[in-house]
Image (cartoon, rainbow, N blue to C red; front, side):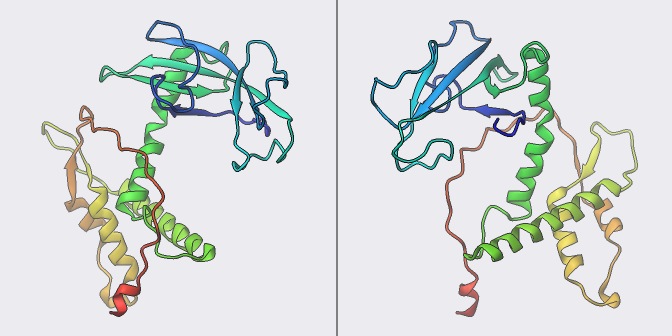
Length: 236
């Protein structure tokens, strides 16, 4: 917000204790409201805040660049909370600073739906490519792992998109199995001589799975910090 950028992010629902858990909401299932928040490091009620603004306390040990340590200064900002039902009977709660006139709830819902390809890409990058765990402790080595996994993901995604799949009269359309494609590309990148090379595209054409867009999966819980998994066990 300080840089003039716009955001749209999903939060826990209004019944939780997350970002939007302590506001006053309408009784209706769907709503679009504007809220204003004032952050402060002091519990003193003598610090005045604008009318209609929610007060939020930031602990002295918490890092926040816009309020100096030991200072009673405040920081105020405003955003929208948009809530709407989704197909499985539950509701999504969206926080954004996009204009309500230019982006009504229906457009917000459409924008959130377009984020799904980004979410699925992160899932592939973390669990299929292997970025959910680091094997290093030093920052420069962690960055090296991140870049190596990003390169592996981009190469795999590029080759998968270039695969020509023959259309047949079947119940489902088919696509390349990304998990198997990642394994094939990983082995291909490790080969160093031309004699060991093989036809990657031909192998990818054999690893197909049906496209079932109607399938739904339970949402994963928020991941917590994990310690690096070192390679030292290989020396044992």
